[in-house]
Image (cartoon, rainbow, N blue to C red; front, side, top):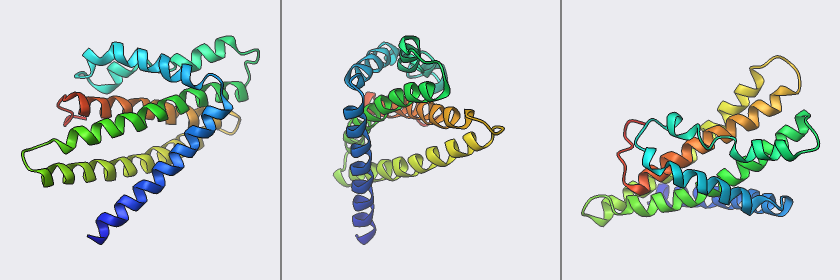
Length: 183
């Protein structure tokens, strides 16, 4: 019972931190809600393809916000590129939070026993926490693996954005009822 409480508290802290990050992103960018809408529209068009491997389906929506941002930016330097990719990452993180809640609701309905559904939801939330840690560590390594220069920041935020986009598709597959065991 104590481990369940610790898990809920840990998850609550992560949700608060993510919410603060997203709230800060909303305040910083007047484009935030439009970015979310653009990505949601793109993802909705992909819904029939969610039974394909994630990378095949996701390639269509990747960089949809970042490319538009860069096309309208007066600057084409590394900080401008990082800002544009960070805008997209913020939108994908908001969509991921929403998708996680919908997936959690869906997995609560797995099986015929309420306890089975609650266990499935706890496992999903633990998996999400582990995935967030993996994503952040993996992308730090991806940034560090390049030769010295300003490309580190582009690679780190680009990696986080791509991985978050893939995770959104996985979570959407769960709440849409697709068999996601091969991912």
